[in-house]
Image 1 (cartoon, rainbow, N blue to C red):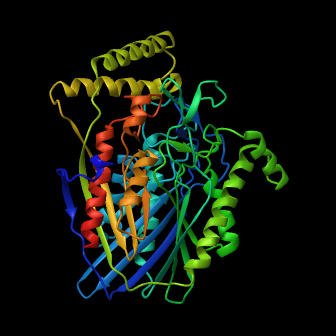
Image 2: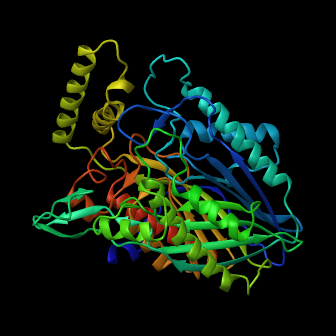
Length: 495
């Protein structure tokens, strides 16, 4: 941690400056729309092609627009929670273009698109898809989803209620569990077997905080609940049905308690090395779900997660409803950071080139198939490694540009990143933040492809998927810089 707290050079481009607004009118608007494609689509999140076979639960875009205004000064943010795997650049650009066309008064740099990381949501880009009847092209999916998101953003912004208020609280729930097992020889594995004789420990800390913020309008009517949990939404990750995963069940439970018209915004905190899957005691957990009368299989697992999150939000509500706020400092900074990339070694490049050759040989053996039908993830995976190595020959110290939002809302802080950020980085942000409560939001903004993981130094040393060269565009040192610059920005705001 000495390295973390040292004062080092900051390398970023400031896009918009923060504004301190106190004694202001606090406005709030909400919207929720269905973004479930009506046609068959390619699903993303696995290394092979999956074409959707129906809908298990609808995908939604949930929007919360906030503005604090005093005379001619003010600041704003528009949170957009999406039941998708990741926010791509093509989706981001399409949303911004459509929002600007519909309402040019909206500052699109203030829009934060974030994903719940569901692995049963449509892909927005990728290799050429097979010409199957009824299978929508990526461009058609982007057009539909971006149009729906833009409509919701404009609706929430234009329907802002003056004299709104918010209240907040925190509780805990065991939702995300470490999925990187470390063995006695120091190697690590994603979803490794804990039953192995040489199993030693789990690599990372688990963050069980459930942060909840409640928003009501000038008529004291509850309109939205923002819920932040450090766990991706991927219980049902390998299914071929479109599915919002456990957040669908969470919304159902919260709607029963707080009302059907309350917009529920889901945010995923730093959780690149955790998942909702239990790594041991599977049978005891299954027994508990059966005794509770939950459904069998994955559906029961999602019901159990919903029970835990709803209980935590309800507990936070008991505290929050005693302290409604509006007249608070509100500041929003949007930056583009330049983080050092992870360097590809010659050995890693040669291994990737061999993988590309094997992949091409498989395509040559099956000329009737497209890359997406063979194993498209590894085509992109190996290709990106080789491309990065070649680019490094001209630039020995490459950097990666990444968007970051940093906000203050009274005693609350928000800080975003575009990665599947390992939990330790999120914990470092929270423990060094000057705020009373800090909300870390990962997968916010267009992510790196084909993999968005940002691993710690100890994870890279242990190896395994999520911490190997193909998994990481940015180096562990880049992760340290991301944390450091985020905290520096928060501290400057609080001063």
